[in-house]
Image 1 (cartoon, helix red, strand yellow):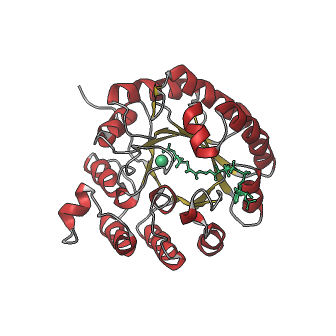
Image 2 (tube, protein in one colour):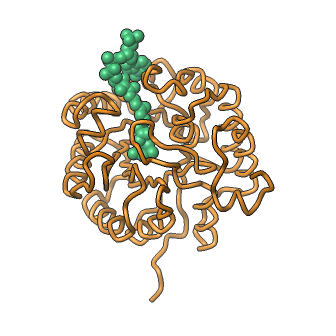
Length: 301
Ligand code: HMG
Ligand code: MG
């Protein structure tokens, strides 16, 4: 039986945001800017630049305004994350036109990540999304703990779908559905994304995998089979959520691009230039780059 596959796929690079937010040592703003520019040079067309969150909660993102000011361009869709009214007000002070809001399915995760329950978080986000849409912003909703929660275990898929419904009714353009702690198995991924594809055919659907248990590439294949062609990935496999124990690095952009291109799925990304981008950030990281493609194609580690 032949696999049914798309001819091209979109990579949403989350390295400058999800990748760096968990780094303990502050990465100089100038290096972040060079990293972002270099990722663009490798062909990245959609990217999370940074997040307008509380610097007390995530010190690495304290320079978000400066990063946004310096790094917006008109050829790339540049996302900035915002958790609340204050974050959105900071967005309004920039020329950024694409915002990512975020929430988890599970209360226990949200209490630790945004200091609110799911219901409290949604009550704050929905009017903010409606206002952003009135102002013609592109709005992406990032849904954490869509499969498993580090505190509550397996999540009932109907709870994830219900949350997606609430976001779609509020008017979002994209749902990015995340396996925050890298615990989902390919059959669970296929099942949930098939349901999402059937239910939300008109919304951009994106899969966001962390590679904690080395299942991320298998999960991407399962998501492709369910009709998904957008993937959040992080150059060098950096990342993790500081408030989700077990959220190891995101799936590495270079490993995903390598797999997709080998399957004749065009990503528009130049792997050699991607390695150059990783080399910019690598000396500033607290841990080695562990992606397979990087390891096999450099002498760095
Ligand atoms: P709080 O402490 O409940 O909020 O935090 P607060 O309203 O009491 O504010 C506390 C302080 O933060 C105040 O400052 C506020 O002004 C300030 P003070 O008066 O004490 O000097 N503050 C802000 N400053 C800048 N920008 C803001 C902002 N908001 C408040 N937007 C809050 C609530 C939501 C702010 C906090 O919990 C927070 O910032 N959380 C963000 C956590 C985070 O960034 N997590 C990672 C992103 S999610 C993720 O990675 C998952 C994802 O990748 C998908 C997946 O893999 O699952 C997307
Ligand atoms: Mg993440």
